Image (cartoon, rainbow, N blue to C red; front, side):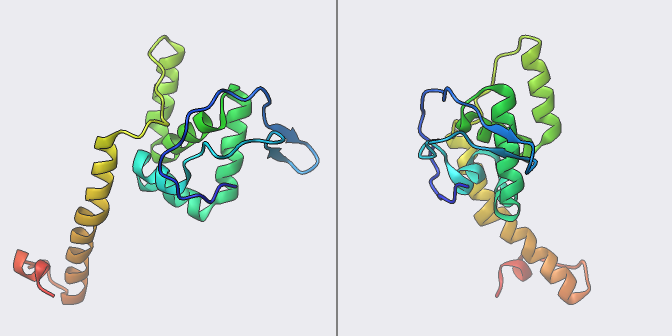
Length: 157
């Protein structure tokens, strides 16, 4: 399991070995000698796909790992590509499935491992600006019992 907080994954050549399924344990096993230096970790998932995969990685790391290994084995892709796809899936499963279906019908393949500056900026704005603002409004409504909340109430401490 990768615990690195690295935000930027490195590109690598595809591995020639795939994860294997152990019927005795009912678990997917990574290929031997797998190089995990290319992986980008939970913070990278947060910046690429938002809070969904980030929270999944932190709260259900084993389930996440098994999903990545299964995808990697099924699709015959690199570990990095499998992580990108599972992060996208955990962010919005319906859109991810729609895109995969479109790819099967000839649409261009999306590389979910690329960290786009705009996506990272939006995530940071939401994490540091919008979310605290909304939480402050919810707190004021809950603590006062009134929906009459002004901007001065929100920004005052």
